Length: 106
Length: 120
Image (tube, each protein chain N blue to C red):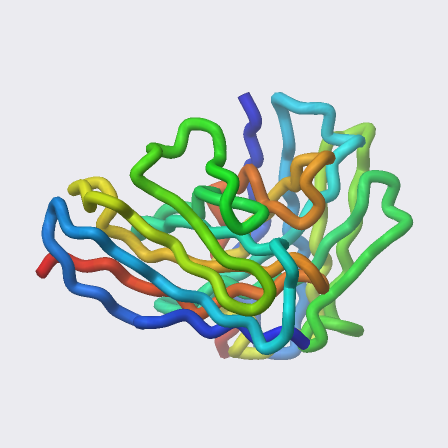
């Protein structure tokens, strides 16, 4: 099974901050990596797929990079609506999610 | 507009069974691979199972193999998850999610989830 490890588990930040979340796979997943945002009591929302492709309607302050086993989600300037939990997902071999990164108010 | 509406969750005793349903609308259901993903209270997301557009390719997470069965009825635009031999660690919100036909594995649309509680 492909294991996905996100860091950090929790991130404290302020509006306007640049935020970076990393995701590491236990083996190469090529570019088959997606990022989702989830708010309490809500379903996840797709943000990025194929490691760096922004889903339609997602603000351009979100970006993704990486390939192989190391990936990054960056929020260039954190907005109030961005406080949430973020999950990476590999879909190279079946599907596995990272454990999540909660972005909270500093 | 894509809509996925799960139902069938509830309280069930350990060892019991439950059937979840997901009603789909707003897209050509028969052409989409569908998935179940679950989330235990306060925990992360866990992929459960997927079924391709014709039901020929079905996959399960290891911990669900032999206990869960995914199926679909394209005439009813519905996805199902039959769960048996339920354990306390199966307690979770169960989401159905659709893949874009051109983006295998990417979960583009999600339902609101249905809560399954396994407890005596």
